[in-house]
Image (tube, rainbow, N blue to C red; front, side, top):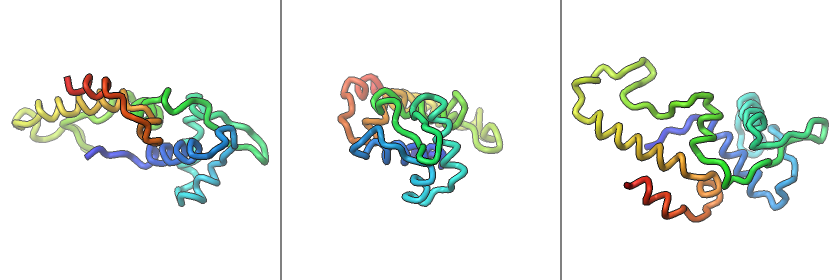
Length: 149
């Protein structure tokens, strides 16, 4: 099963909330997101600032300020969002854990199949747009066929 860290979850929640509003130019504050979804303010605000710095969101400062969507969700892939939020290029390395390299590396008989699985999942996630994920738009069949090739 794919593990999604909390920061990415909060980013996805905020983006879906904003996309579901009828008025895409309407401003949404980090506090509003936190109140609706009961997420921690500091982490949610930081995630929204990261998305703002990468031009996914546009911010308006001031007492009535907030964020609005600056990009269509079909222009951003899931993997781009994850890399931006986590701040690292390599996602989902296999044969590692929080302590480093797996102690079974070199003796394990499934490292190659798991690496293949990881490669295929990453290829799929690199093509999965946030619109497809969050708004239920049709998955592009050509993308799915590419991943399975």
